[in-house]
Length: 555
Image (cartoon, rainbow, N blue to C red; front, side, top):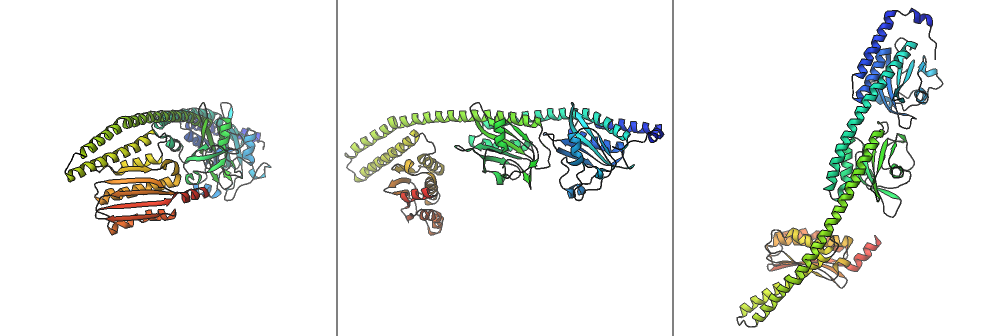
């Protein structure tokens, strides 16, 4: 560090020293007059530049790992120049020396110092240098960097003034940080309460999407992802994502080890800074070229198990996350996990109640309604033998057939209601019939033949439901039918879906809508037949069951 000429100091006019002290007071007043942390940080740099008459100034915020700079607020450098340079300093060379040894550094020729690391392309030339640490609560929070003194070099008095300003700035930054932390806690507490209430009224399958969306609203511009364990493996899958690259990472599977999510599970929350990217990409981190940006991650954990990990990531060079942000994210994750667990428990309770209610209805239908209808049919049969009029006897026989059909349909419903699995094929087809028959005076009859729930599954079940919906919709909308019936069954090794109606038939221009059903049947080695006329329509979709199972086993 160059020595100061005592004669020059003694020769300096008293008024000049007084002016500089007044400048220090003005700088202190400017800094302490603000409470917003970003504004305070910029004011500190601007005040320091004005105080020692420097061309450029900056304030570097030290990262959590104390090895580099997390933020870099600069003054004097235009936006165009900053864009041309690329990413701003991370804390190497002389800047890194001030991080490692937080004592003031004053240089007349920055480039000749052995600690200097040089300048990147398009960087303006910088000669004289003055750096001083800023301490908050006894800990080094960041460093002031000033370059290119307009008087040629920085003096010992400049160093003393900057040190005094840095001390005062430490108190101002401390107050601003406390205010910022209090506001952050309040914002996240309110969001946590709202999220917990929302989760309790959201289906369990949508909870992760809801969680990622709400957190993304709080940390704009960040990638928010929820990773869940893949059962039976040591891998994690991205179940929900919001923010940059969300389409690329959604559904990605990654090994738990060497990921921020895995570290969060092990350490109950983790915070990382901008680092060199590893060989295997972590979907929870934002990567630019060979670096990944800062991130935080917390486990979604209840007393009994860990259901996933909530991660928030920023791009390299952006502001790192604070310990307070990790704390509030952890609190939100914990509350969300509890709310999700309560939602699942309530859903299970409701399903159990629904199952019990269905069982009761099934018993009532079987024990009372079917018996009453069956008794009414027997009575009509005995009456039919005493009716001499052939026309009247035919009408009684038709009513008996309708009662038999009603008994068959009720038994179908009883079987479906008694099943524990609400997503069975029978349930899905009953829902389809209810969905399309709202405008009908008489709902379509629904009959099953064979073990359809056991034999028709997965993609074939989806096809059967889709075909049934399409055929029923055609009959309801276009046939003008009084009666419609849907028969789904297994005949030998074939699966068949048959829809019949007594409508006016299908005109040629409407047959084109059935082309998709024909293609579906052909893709499975089956066929689609249509018999239509003025007295009604019979549409049959039939595919071989054995071929379907072979196709599924080879996929």
